[in-house]
Length: 393
Length: 200
Image: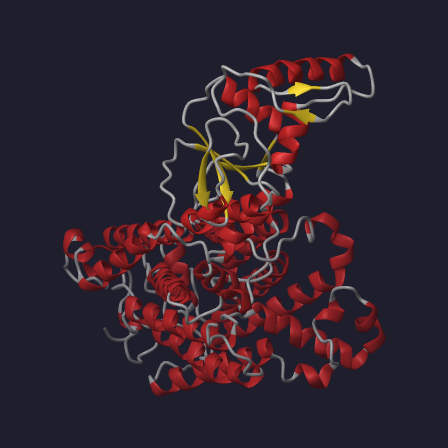
């Protein structure tokens, strides 16, 4: 269990704030002129400070979590609500350009004696409170579709390490632009672009970011697990027996039907298997070789082991992978021994006719009792003749 | 790099402090330090850096002191001072804001950059600058509430945590700011804020 973060109470905010204010002031961000010159592209201090800070913290956070020191789910994530945040960003941007200060830097400016900083603080306080007061009346402009822990990784369906690399490259690109636009008096001194990008700090950043993007098995990260859970809840993890039967009959390329068993001892040659399937133990699933071209369908006698294997494979970012809905029992009921439908609508009858075709193809027979399945006399179809069912999950 | 006021017109050397105090720090060094502070805050306390929240806490606490029932019944305000005005004094966001002021005060004092003045961004009167600061500030306040944060809370903290909302906010807020600043300069028909000395 990661040690951090811990519950420290509110007072740590004071020294953190002191350090924050001091660093901002040291960097010149308490000066409206610095910020104004950034907005006219003459002085890139703001971009340099912000992006250096973001990349430093982002890499430190990512690797701390990967190394098991930090539990990100205990960290307060900013809320995401796209519509109000878009609106807010627009309004904020206009205000930022007018005041040449933001809430944090306005405090620094005021503390440095600047009366415009004090004026900005007053404005910020009034604007905040008026908005807060009117919040219920703002409706969808204020609260539209709030989501509490949305990350670029989970929303874009991209591993967190790749996002880390993307942001790092973006930051370095911004630094290169900054150096270009500031000219010789830039903080980079007279270093050429190549020297700058090849400098030790940048190389460290790029190395850490590249290593992050190469980590495939980030299955422990929250974003990956949230995505997997979402697939389950919208039933994207299931495939119907009839669909699987079609795939097998059509000889769908790169189809791998896998029966998940608990141990090799469970494999009895007398048991029925879905034609073309292979048996894999649950523990072997964690190291199963899978190329991105394979369509994997998992099943097990009771469905439990198949579902467990599904989660294991998805956590390894293997896809596409499906679970046979309702397991072998559903295969028997719907493919091997389909029953006549209770309603006689055209759709239901067409479906039954299709099921009967598959049934014949797979070698099942149906008796007068309906869904009782008995061993067929003979089959020349691919796959093994019908046997009795395994007694495991 | 000495005082800015000594140059009449033309391009200033980049990053000259407006006062006669010490030069600013290297922005990359400052940025890395800030990033380490941000990391330490998140890793130890589970919270990142922020500024706009403190304003709302302070404002709500003040309001709760004079109109407690109104605040308690308000669906939004009631969340900002849940324990009443006295408890709000030990709210994380508020304490952080106090810290920022103290830290900036100490740093500017020590470096000789503290000066009571109006810092101009364009060639304009003090009244004009102060008016822009107030109006701009009001828009900052509105925008920060809607966006659930500002450049510190969303930009720095949300950015480092790779939050979707933060990475929408950053390009839109800065893009808008760049465009607005461009238009404002057009209107004022001046160029870059060059060698405008501090005025009283």
